[in-house]
Image (cartoon, rainbow, N blue to C red):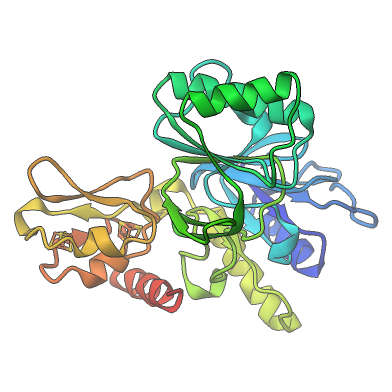
Length: 330
Ligand code: SF4
Ligand code: SF4
């Protein structure tokens, strides 16, 4: 039986949870204050007093990272005001940082607004290990007030090459993170492979789109957002659609874009416009798509003059809807 995690407490969340159960799935409702909502006796609906922190994986085999641990599921539906969900693409809770060998590439440690002293020490120790392993580490801090062991850790991380920034503002667009330095006012653009944070992050991945905009409803494949303030009949329709998409077998989920190298003229359009930095040029000077990053939004396929990009498994209608959604999201 497929499990769908639903974040929210309101009528939207309950309606979609009922719809998931009605369509043969199991719903796990994450609700901070679940008074008045009860588990279903047959186990088809479970209510957890928790909230969503991050989502990992691809549709069909996802992990919802909650305050109380991980929940394996096929999809996630956010049916709450985005501000109340501490969700952001590619964000990993600090406590989930792997022991030993950490992630490669560029890692942003977001230590603004917390965590506590132990958490900071854990983050800095992890940063020192990652730096020794060749990972680039950017640390976002409110201020460095350190003494004793903490000061030593900050110094070690800095000497090992960590870049400390005290940001005035942080904005995310796809996988790009623009950090405005509070002293110089300069904008530093970072393309993190992982963002590690323990605190709620302002701009949730659900700030664009909704179920009714088509299969691509958020920045993240497999994460759907239900619109708020719908009339009763609109809500039922949206909940039905969300449940149907969330319970869809993985084979029917949109798959990453693919390039026909024979048709690629290396114009770089797809590389420039992909909001998720999934398109890149390979050693032969042809475009290629990173399947882990591609959200199947269809934007590159729409822009490629040589019609070299296809979205396997998508019907034309599907693709049209996704392209419209991607363009509207600009
Ligand atoms: S937009 Fe099309 S032709 Fe241009 S680089 Fe990408 S795949 Fe190649
Ligand atoms: S479909 Fe194209 S533009 Fe959209 S995420 Fe994938 S590679 Fe990027």
